[in-house]
Image (cartoon, rainbow, N blue to C red; front, side):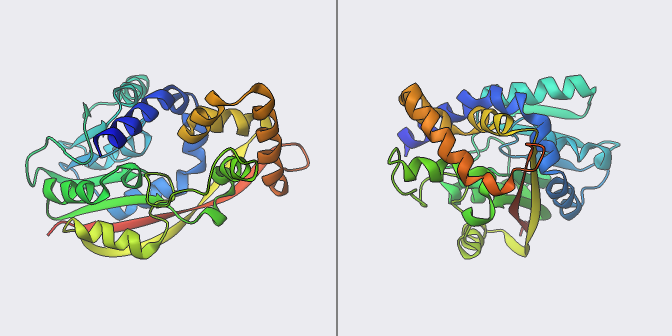
Length: 280
């Protein structure tokens, strides 16, 4: 497990700069999702909110207006580079009431019952020990407090994300994905998602799907965005020849062809899944 955790952390450290560069595109694509997550979280003035696996921090920043006065957002990520990206963004926006920390989602340093709400968007399925992460969220959350987690739904409804991996498999550069390994679709099965969240001691209230709408100005922008932010694609292209990369890109773009508009832009649908649970 230690080697897997190290590999995961190093992978996310390697793409942190890309996530910072592509922050606005992802924020637009997931705006409806983020709004729904905050609505379900329902934070109040004075609340202390923990964001786990915050990445560049955009989702958590949305709670600040609702927890003033007296509230605090604790924005955390396992990769120091992600934490610094979030810190820079908060400074650009002139935000206050945010504390930034490097935290292992499976071994949080916060005390028991320390926060009123927990937010985690696209993080828990990437933690090698998901059950430990769920247990930690339950431990630091006060009884009755809300935890809202988002994961990706199935591969078939998220073509923007799956086109490169599908192409790599078709070309023999990768085997079939291991659905037990950390990755974006590891918790796409609703029952497995329910089991992992409940295993930590959280009481699940609702699970619902929310649409995501990806838009890029061109296939070039889509490809560069994916290379910037996908650990899988970054690691794969590092070991391929330029010719192999060109072939991979061509096949991946064919997998997205139905979503290319007349002006060359790309508009692809996606689906995320939200869980609302309570501390007990």
